Image (tube, rainbow, N blue to C red; front, side, top):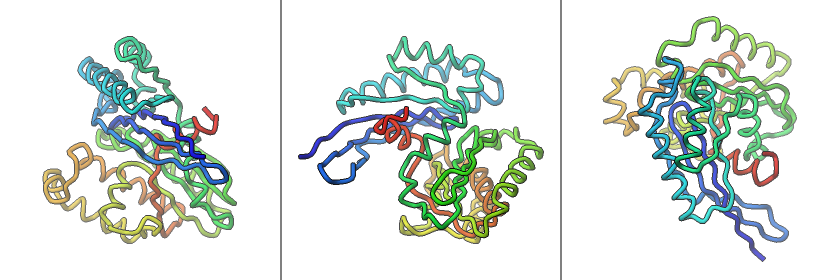
Length: 296
């Protein structure tokens, strides 16, 4: 007997917002399957407003309302039975974040919850990570967003420690991350990984996913520190326009990919990790799984 449920997740980030629709397949005696049915990404850079001016602009508020109306209609067409919409760093920091949430509820009938970095990290960690985590190994999970980066250390397949830092791609593009923040991250990583002989990185976020796709590697194979470092130099050698025309990057990816790679490189350097695995997971995947297992 097969039973199929349709769930959706809306992730409102600092660089883009996503709607993920998932078919959840339940079958007697078998592990539940989570199959992606649709993914829509809208490049609305809320962080540009929130981190520089402190509020979401009227133009971006209108764009958000339009996007949410579209998401609502798409969920109706897909016959989604349950959804959650979470907003992260940019909406957390915009002083009119709650007003925007109220307006979207009124205009698009989508209920949005603004979550903190700790909850964000916990939701992402509730994804398919357990398939990757070997009990005899130590992993540093790094999720790079537009406004913040979540670091979670796993040992024996259990969370040891987790922390969110205000370092993200949109912030870095706007020169809003000072040396003190980098020093704090370096200190945190070094202190928490010191007792472990070997640490492997797990990366999530649109930029590392793109880099992995460009590498042409099989999904279960990692990228090496040397490879990431050479790609960082290569991306830096191209102009913004070249990254769009020659590499086929989206305009809203072509600028943020460089600061993103810098965060992963630093995390690898400070933890001593030689490799980084890139599973296809993110906040939206985590939201669907956390909903299904009754965690949110």
